[in-house]
Length: 464
Image (cartoon, rainbow, N blue to C red; front, side):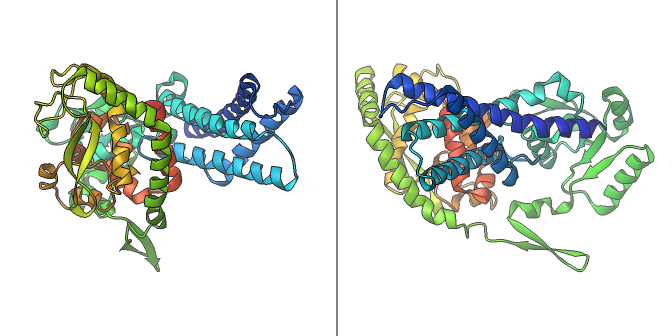
């Protein structure tokens, strides 16, 4: 009953929020159009513009339903939610433009363009707000499933992060249990913008019955990656005998580091590895990124000139900071940034963690805070060293220590921005958490790139 009520609330909340966001976006766009006084100033009756906004909002919700954009799913940093929202809004306005042309209507193109841009912004902001608000809602938390995670190792923590990244699943991880005495009372932190939050290891297997009563636990998730079959059966039998619901992650977890496809021959599952990089989008991505880079350079050259000027005024040294990084297939290239530190700083020293690090110049603090120092990497996109969106490039001495899993991130060009850059883990070494880059590599698409770029514009001006 609790789960059904939660599903009903979520299945109504997201479509309603999207409907309101698109409606307000179109009304705001028309008001901006009238305020700016641009174009031929086509005037719409108030009732007509309200009707148009409501119809377009309804069409957006219907298209998102068709695209299954409201399904409960797990993703990294809510990016699937944002991607589906961007896709739904884009397809709605493409359809609207086609209808306008086919029926030979004459609405202002400015209203149409403003409406599309505002709808993207409003829906992305609304989806991001829901992502952060839902886990904190006292009302909704009453309908969530409360779980213990049995196993506080790499697998258990990966599952914890995935659950935190998926508030629509309606699951609250209360804590870990682990039979390793060295892990007792340790804290496992979640990833993402709220990376300071975490849950503790509350005990071992013998503590589960007490914890079930104390925290009103609904289920235990067993996440021990190297567990043998007899031990797993023993744990499952123990929990079942205590009338405790249990789920477990199979030993195939490590296989899923590679992209796989599951077929069945009769009733026997057959796992096949799929080539991750036979992705038609990656073939055209270099050319679309090159086009976007040229457009950005044309639009932002006054900002580039201003940044270069204030860097030269603030401290002695070159405008650009250059450093060797490792790109696709291990190729070494020079990455460009607007210089934010004094020239006597070791180029390969530990990255500053605090904003007021003595190595950072006064202007450098502002550049790093706004991430404007990264804009110089548009030069790397023009040189075909980098994508706009992709895995973050790492320094050679760190790549030399990569294992086989780490090397997966070298199979495509690195990017200026990406999931790792948006996360709370951006202050940690990249290789400490591969979830972000592996997720992007497996799921690269045009709309995923749009989602990441929009989240970068809205949320990533945090710097250090």
